Image (cartoon, rainbow, N blue to C red; front, side):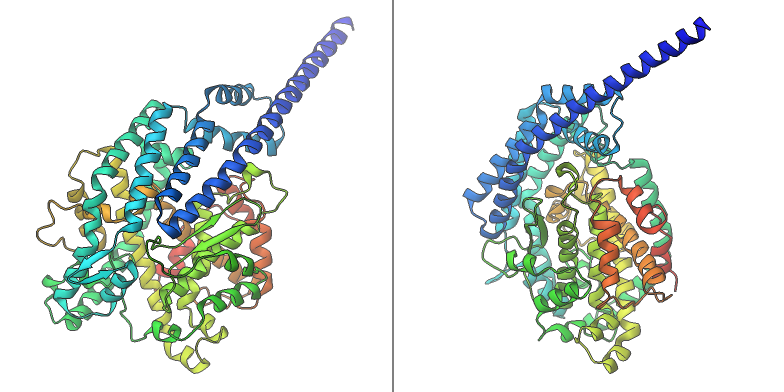
Amino acid sequence: MKRVLGGIMTLGILCSACTNKTERMESELKSFIQECEKTVAPIEKEAALAYWNSSITGADADFQIYEAKSKELTAYFADKVRFETLKKIKESKAVKDELLKRQMDVLYLSFLANQVDLEKLNKTIEIQTKIEQKYSKFRAIVGKDTLSDNDIESELKKSTDNLRLEAVWKAHKEIGNVVAADIIALAKLRNEIAEELGYKNYHEMSLELSEQDPKEILAIFDELDGLTKDAFTQLKSEMDDHFVKRYKLSKEALMPWHYQNRFFQEAPTLYPVDLDAYYKDKNIEKLTSDFFAGINLNADNILANSDLYEKENKNQHAYCITIDKKGDVRVLGNLKNTEMWMGTMLHEFGHAVYDKNIDPTVPYVLKEPAHTFTTEAVAMLFGRNSTNPVWMSEMGIISADDAKKIGDNGFKQLRLQQLVFSRWAQVMYRFEKGLYENPDQDLNALWWSLVEKYQLIKKPQGRENMADWASKIHIATSPCYYHNYLLGELLASQLNNYICTQILKTDNIKTPNYVGNIAIGEYMVNKVFAPGAIYPWNEMIEKATGEKLTAKYYAKQFIAE
């Protein structure tokens, strides 16, 4: 009996010690998190405001403030004493509270990414800021014309003058030569940082630190390559037949500037429907406001804070930014009355309503989307509506008769867009993977080999010594990110399938009617937005849709005829 009692007493002492250790570690972690939020939140707000201002003005002073605040944030997360404290808590395995543990894991990755020479980290910020400023201020020159990105897209889409198309396309590519050397230097510096942290290169590190397995991502891209190759090849042949007549050329003479887009990342106009014509006299801001309000995701305060029209020296792209994680969410755009910009507004405001509707009780560290590709998925889910004839009819953009006329072609255009983008994403993902595996290789040769393989586009003569690859801003300023767009498309189809089958109670997954259905907004808030990053991304997806991420609904929606 004494031995048994002794065993019980020993077990009790051990349990008490475990409890005490858990209490100590959790208490220390809470203090660590509180100090982190108190320090980091105001710096992140100032950095976000500076980035926003620099995007609008292009002014040196704004870029300098953004650079300084970025360095301040980097210095915080590079602090080795703080990292060792967090590492000690993590390695104790004593933290049992799930919410605390999740915050710890997310913070740990943020600190780990910065545990290298601070001078190198600051240098990357300096180079990237310089590159961003060059992109922001660049305008293509064709003869006496100074062209914005919108101007270039318009000419590539509308002109049938082969010489003009070539000149416009080549003028845009000149930005590549302006920034290429800086991007290569930045890639090498990023690789040095990754190697110091024990990774093969920056590409591998970026994926792993964003809770993605590089092997799994590669497997998904290989799977999608197999799924889309034949369908895309057939559509590409149809495009070429169309363009032979449009440009009065042989198939062999078709060049990148004939595909109506700077990178052939957008679908060309192939079907007998001019979607732009339906938007040319519409108020795209109001359509955006009305749609989101109709599904109980009011975005009017976001619209009021946004900057949506072209200005000199303004960033020519579109993005959504959260300033303070307290509801100040903004969208930057360069609006034109086109289908593309309608889709872009729905896309960017998809990001915005996600950020706005994260539950305010979610801890600061987790007050962000479950993953970058989950917010891309939401943006894509809503952005697809700009070509949906049912959506266009319900929003008063077209009549019911017009909806019937363009019905099939509207979806065909969306399907074409998905397949074109899927192949383009293959180029971007594999190029960046190759760039960081060997930044000293002939990058333009790598670029064109991938374009020819996945997009079936020929390299023009005389591009051997050019830096066409560097004309794509994401390679410099959003490194190793592009694969998330394609993952987002997969999840968008998965969410759409759930909404159609479980909320709308329809098997029409191709042209669903979201307009005015508040149950859709409630579902998105409760299952996708509100949790923020409380759950790892695949856990959130499973809770929201009943399954982990899968490509089968994307294939069902866009690949199967």
